[in-house]
Image 1: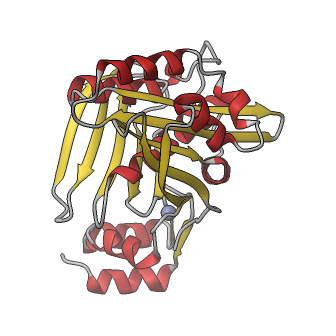
Image 2: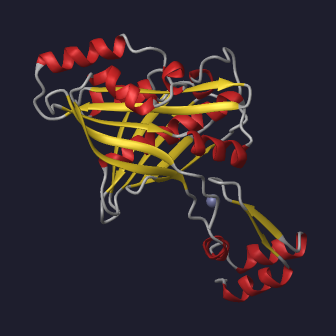
Image 3: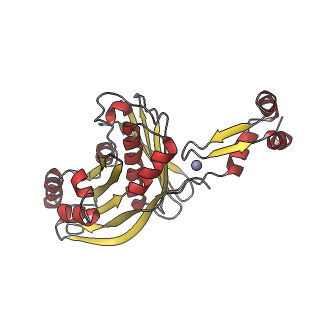
Length: 290
Ligand SMILES: [Zn+2]
């Protein structure tokens, strides 16, 4: 088993005359694990943390064996950003170049660039559904709201952010979506509340940030239906890597054995290293196809 973080927290429920559904979450322990696993730049950390928080919030919208993923393919130095969660809120994230940075350093979009923003939903049977929109700002939350508005025609408000003071880091956010046939009044109330919301940084630093978010967005017109954990949990394991190595075939494996005598493979989601020595490569060669 690969890296596992401590649990973050997500609340899911309905609000404003039950015309909206929401998820609010704190993802700080996940962000700390991303920091350990990927040694990212400041911008890289925030891009990965926001993508992870986004799929954590989205995990409340799926059930059973379904999975939900975000794939951001921009032309910036970060390369492909990919985050994935199951319905238990067990998630992981990777990026082509986590240590990327670019001017202006205050904008995550600077390392993301322009390109495609894709949401991937996998059904119980493993069948994937993909929807793609152009990257809007690259700040992830805005892109997710844009995706739901234009690809699925679901009015959506999303904010994902962080507070960083020295080594003290807090991350979290909200996702509010309209249920079918919302009233104009509900949508305009939500819009107003989002516009007047204090910076997420301030909310994250409050004593009970999730409850504060709910009160600021919905006053007292909300109902929490479920509280659950979100964790960075990578399912990587040695046998999986061994199976991947087998697919290289006898010839390629023999070449590796002759040239290096050993192999180190790192999981690109959690950074855990898997070592295969000469004898183990030998065993793989006997099991591999010609
Ligand atoms: Zn892993």
